[in-house]
Length: 162
Length: 320
Image (cartoon, rainbow over all chains, first blue to last red; front, side, top):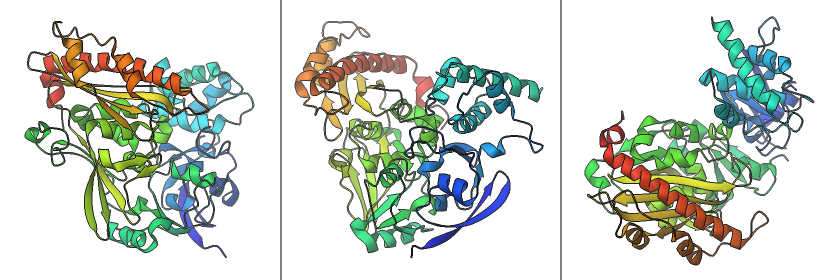
């Protein structure tokens, strides 16, 4: 019988616990143990970026982290980006407005990555946007509308801060 | 694409970590950032019996500027106690990349780190982990090698300092022994009137490079090129360093300061490298790339050295 560990984390502001073996990836803990299927799993070796979540505010690959390592930390997934009343965040609204997605598979990863990117750099240049999202793959859009969405999100965030 | 079963250890102190490593020897793997180890586990290319997760060990995440100015002037190899950047085992790439102190003392580090995978990977991956992983196509091993840095290894039996020239022993193989933990790495400071450049070519931005070059060029008191060292990634089984100082003198010969001519150096480099082909690039292409990138990097490092020599105040004592 494989040893299991009690894992406690704060996910989207809510204290959650789960029991899992040490080899459980954070991505699988979120999806299978906690039922938060918004975090998508594409390549499972850190290339595609679909599984990106915020760990203590910083974007990381949840498929490249053991859930036990995240014990005691704070996680934000795509489910936690919207306001408490369900209003989409400025980044989410911008992706909708600018058609920054088609099939939507990569979108949770992009939304988490871009949320952190714009927090650290509220007015990124085109080049900074490309560098910022370079670790996320999208097979549908050709990226043009994603870049436009990031710039639009920056505008919406600036308006909101005013 | 799930890790195989393993026994998990999350020591809270360094002493505890070393005890676990001593008990399990070669069957134990250290987990720091996990950006190389977890993919290997997911793909079942590695199946260690024990994982020693050091993320809860306090005091390993430091990025410190150490040593004195005089030590930095010592020749390569004699610099282990000198001035430089000491990076702890848990310092993430992103923390080193964003440190103003590091950029002032050893600008080759942030220059190379910008080429390591993607920003999100750099939030989690560690500098010392990259060195311990010893991938000959990775950026940081070449940086440590060209700068003549060291790795500090610690085990239950004691500590030792391993020079970069002895640390990388083969593809994905280092001089670390079973039971040892790479506790920190030391990158010597940039001496005065010296410039750096890092450049690489990869299939896609963020991929491992087909070939890459880290160049360090030194000027004499008359601002004429006097030394050149170049570290290579992706062209040999370990990071390779060429001392191009004789070529540097040739590049400067008969020319005014700032007008060193690096053309022709590419041919010399091509003649001194013997890369292996793989599915990404043939040996000839890698040799060609290494030559072209060397010329570009030497030119950029020369310009950087001149810039630093002419505006010393800006670069020397930026807020540490």
